[in-house]
Image (cartoon, rainbow, N blue to C red; front, side, top):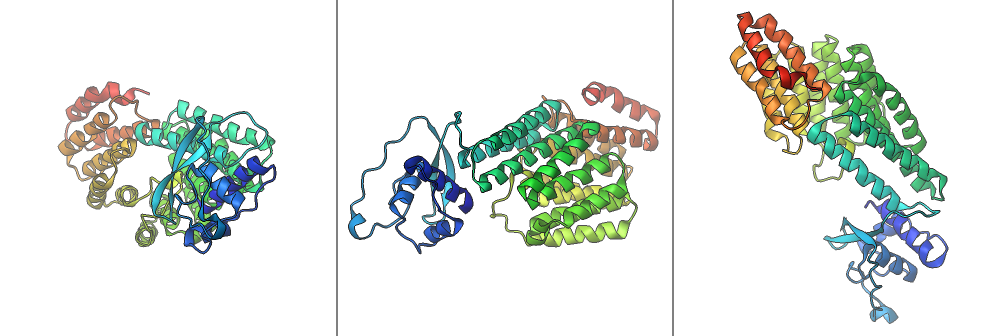
Length: 409
């Protein structure tokens, strides 16, 4: 939980205990974490016990005066499930107790956390399998649920977070369609996601949408639009505050500029992306949607830029660096980068090695259909192979060998 989320959870618990919403703020939570306030008010202590399932002393608070004798802990409700969060006050992990979803007239932080878990599950599925129609449908259902909760009683903070989640779900659906190669439906979802991000007043969600808009434009070969979308991403306030987001925006700009034929500007953007990423703290928590972005992803984007601007040897080296750094769970990204590696090898006329490398794409994705974007990339490989192979036999052999896997939707 962030400080704001914990404050909201405590206020919700106080409402359940007393019938009146609490006034706990982020500032209050920071005072607890710093030790400035070592013994919260009675109703805050009781609310913290409901939220965390732990006594005040187990959370690191120190009783004072007549509170030296601490009352027994509240009995644990069996119909709850625990969520892990880290207490900076004690440096120990604790379990946050959240009620299971049930029909009620009020919406609180527990609903926000539950929906956020659903987003994380979809992102994990995308990383393993890639975008597909079922993922998009599930994401849109999550957006509908988040918006449906707006009809219930909630604080303004919770309402904004629900809008942000609806934006995140909708953007996830758009990305699933982009990765699946179903580009026609993705644009309207991105328009909707941007509107929801505005309602949430969430500049990070707006940056996510512009990042995806740049990717969609590139897939459609609308390169000026891809550059303009990357510029819009760079203009969001989150980019000015976060070197991580700034790095991604610069890298996305580099890809658009490379396809537009502006080699020098593309390479300058890559340099700025590297400088910004070097300033990030990997230990800092990050939103689920941008968790994929790291040195591995930047190396992968560098491979694209270098290959497009005519530096296939540098592209091959960048692809190898990306593959060495990619986590095993990012199966789709690994397969996609492998396909980029094969293209870089092919563009150096290393035909035999390129064919062998491209074949590993199917092995990496074994058990899952190839996403449309990956099939398109392999189609690019096949066309370049036909153009560069010393004999038609090599290209035909490759096509025959992988025809079934390559063409399976």
